[in-house]
Image (cartoon, rainbow, N blue to C red; front, side, top):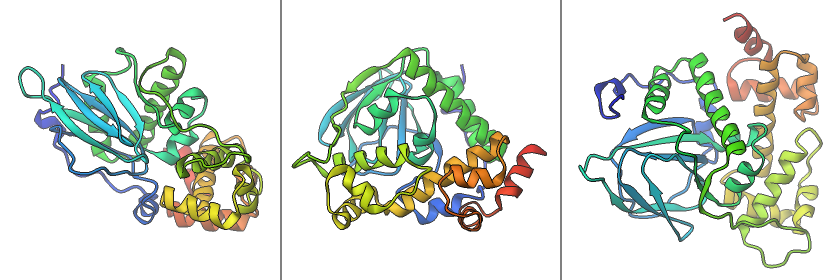
Amino acid sequence: MPNPSSPQLKAAPPVPRPDRQFYAKTAAFGRFGIRWFDPQMMEREHFHGHIEMNWLTAGSMDYLVDGKPVEVPARRLVLFWAGIPHRTTGIDRGPNGDSRQCNVYLPLDSFLHMPKLGRLTETMMGGGVIALPLDSIGDETLVRWYNDYRRGDAERGDILRSEIGLMLRRASVDGWDELLSPWIEAVQPATRGATPLRYVVAMIRHILENLSEPLRAEDIAKVVGLHPNYALNLFTAVMNVSIHRFVLRMRLIRARALLFEGSLSIENVAFQSGFASLSQFYHQFGNAYGITPRQLRSQHFHQ
């Protein structure tokens, strides 16, 4: 079995992808990343724009997730939405004191676009913390993922994210163990006194379900029964990004996936992703990815 602390994990920094400029400017959506390190205590809670996956080679860790205690066991891949404040409060480094930790940081926008995850998406966005089945993954796969990530090759990166998506899709069928049950409940227009996080999750769900349709702030706010200005400010405060930029990012993610599928014209890709015009689509796509939709499709099919 590969040793997670061996020199094979020390490689050159990953090569920047064309869309990294977007993540550099939008802290709400973290960059994709993988790292191996010695488990560390956290002095204060923090949050970031990922679905975070934790793996321990030995021992265990104690977390506080929104103030709720969670114990992370060894050799189980543990997932949670890192947009909820969390921190490590205790570490057991195992019988030999040599525990290593691997974290996979899956951008929230990429996760929300993954198809057929069903209750897994609901659980993550509901604040749940889960451990995947024992046979879901092991050191060997995580080491290979890490080395692929560090190579910075775009094709390997896409394959890597596809493998993560398939792992999560299998988990959605096989099930998982809940370390912390979902606690962010659905919000309806008649709901009173819900927490800001509950309101925001309800707005995100509405956006994802209606991404190809016009999405006005008034309509999104109506879903949770809030004044539009208050809803906009609440979303920005919780998500660290405006509703407008969140909607735009999710539309770009959908468009990129449709371009890779190759069955639709670029015009249809634009409209099925919710863009009002082809010129708007080209402008926003170029800003986010540094190339045109046609260039992206051409590169993909001529590799």
